[in-house]
Amino acid sequence: MVRLKSRYLLCEVCVSDRSNLLLLDDRAIYTATKAAVARAHGDYGAALSSLGFSVKYLNAHTGIVFLRCRKSHYRLIWSALPFIASLENRGQRVPCFLNCLHVGGTIRTCQKYLVRYNTQQLHRMLPFCQSEAERSEIRKSLLSCTLKKEADDVDEEEDD
Amino acid sequence: MAVFMDLNITYTTDKKRLRSVIETAAHLGYSTVAINYVVDLQQKKQEIGKPKCVLELFDTFPIVQGKSRPIKVLNRLTVVASDPSHFRPNAEYKAYDLVAVYPKTEKLFHAACMTFDVDIICVAVTEKQPFFFKRSPVNGAIERGVFFEISYTPAIRDSTMRRYTIANAISLTETCKGKNLIVTSGAERPLELRGPYDIANLGLLFGLSEEDGKAAISTNCRAVHLHGETRKTALGIVHTMKKDQPLTERQEEEHVPASKRAKLETVDS
Image (cartoon, rainbow over all chains, first blue to last red; front, top):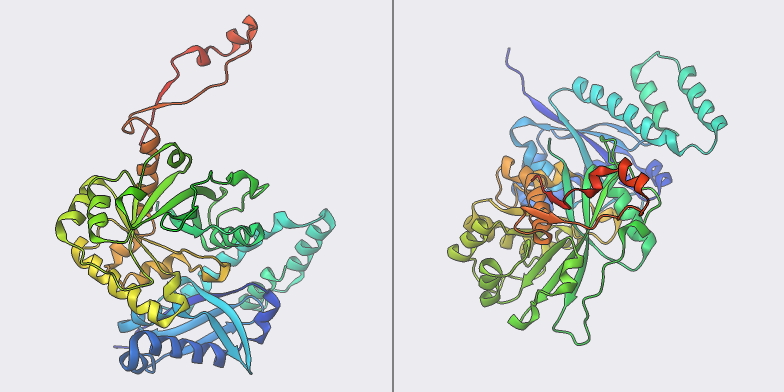
């Protein structure tokens, strides 16, 4: 069987103030990306990005986004991502930038990478704990989160 | 092993902002950054000062994403030259790890490529390039191991600048065929930095192939860093450094015989 292959861009939304992340939603990222592609590549880019382009997943707590696009022209869309300087939602502008972490052929490989990446983040953040009590509390909350779904686990890890 | 480097972070007197830029760079996975001091000698009363000590910035340097070692911070001097007298190598240049020149005229560009003792030649990104890149000086620069720099921050800020950046970058890559090119940020604020993989892919717009795009932020930057290092040494072969003389007690001399040996060290590069 032949299927349409796509590429998934796993991106991280970097903002200066993390509380602003909760303002984001799928729609804001979708429109911002499309506008950026249209600005960088004109009508041709806009036409290509309208094919099979979607925001598959957004985690507003950790600022992780999955973008899906066709395999044949994902580099064109990717090259426009650095030109996004702010996202707009309900009249509020959030200055930010997208940092691409991983490019994968399936959601599954991206998810695997994300789990590894978040573990790495946890190890980076743990030394910043103020006291031993805080550290043990984080450890406890990590262990207490049930492993019903892997995705839940991922969410929990970065809410330091 | 490709470590990513960003050899242009604009110096600001605001220490807190500079610190947050470097922290963001470490978060994005850059192993080395260079703080850029720009000197425009056309304006009067511009002095090349000593660079600020990088150790003053942080107590502990932030750890690089995905690595276990702290970020390395270099100092870089950019001389904006519109007259041949502006570029005078003297003792002040030696305090910097890297030296760059931003030639404004074709004559100076030729001189920068062929004779100036620099590591980096900046390419205009905020205005239309006033001259063509000729094959002979560019080839001369490639032969000498001097690198050309394109910074992408103006392209992010403004649409007109983006056109200039892309146009100048493409006219350069047509001449140098993607070799000896580095892409740097030139960021003043933390939100103007971009991730290394995004920049490698941005090379697509600058007319670079996938491989050259990645080299432009990793291996080429390493070559620039080593080139800067060789300026402090004798042709990169012999490197002298001062060692603390051991105290006169004989006991200590017995413990540390190594320090009595020749104070010459070969640089392995």
